[in-house]
Image (cartoon, rainbow, N blue to C red; front, side):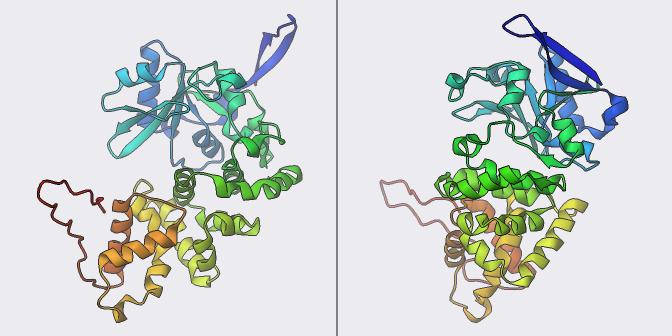
Length: 364
């Protein structure tokens, strides 16, 4: 292990990071997604620093196949966008860039500033500042493809060895700033097959109700991420044990009381892990959440039901989740086909617009 030092404001030398070499972390270049490496190399050739960050490094250290490879750099979003054709800048509070390759989208972000006055705008910082802005130590490890080193500012490498989920942000503010971190803490504890420390558990239970005030888009994003993990069954059970599933996904909570829900979800997880099902298609990820609900409608004995009727019922069932209408429709069609159920108007026809007016009927 290499230790990186720096001088503080008083001129005293202090340790700021621990660097782990290839001999220690055992990650081989061929373990890294080739397209993620291409992005990192292109950024470096353009004169920027670039690293693979977070969950991918955590999973590789645990000898798991990462589901996503996120990249962080000192390049600004506009500079990143210029380098990659078809990329687009997203986000309002903090802008980042989505870089598409085939069916995959790679998230490339700029180092964030650690100054609190800059939290709600796009002032950028250093790698060290960026590390201390992240939520949990096991998710704040930086991999440098060029040097084949892992850079650790927060002690996440050792915490991962101990299977410990530890917050970077102080306990008294971590969930007040962002209640969605509660879901992530539980998800990470499952990912590393570890435990949540007692004090962190107490904070989770104290602030769980604040999740009900989170935006539907944030909750939808987290639900989709859970379905991608291959551990959805375990995560949902753990969310339920903390009383969180009932708060944020009440209808799914009621459905999970039936044994077949977790049996189906276990089968789905196994197919995700084995690569039989694609992690990138939201319509596929939605199916185990809504299949039992659709079958309970007893559509075979309700021949008058149309696709629009089922769509409306499924959307109501999924609340507060708001996945794209097209993905919901595709998920329903797959479930109906698999169970040999036919509906009237399986493909929803858009009504003809009135003369002189454009139709505002949303696409489904």
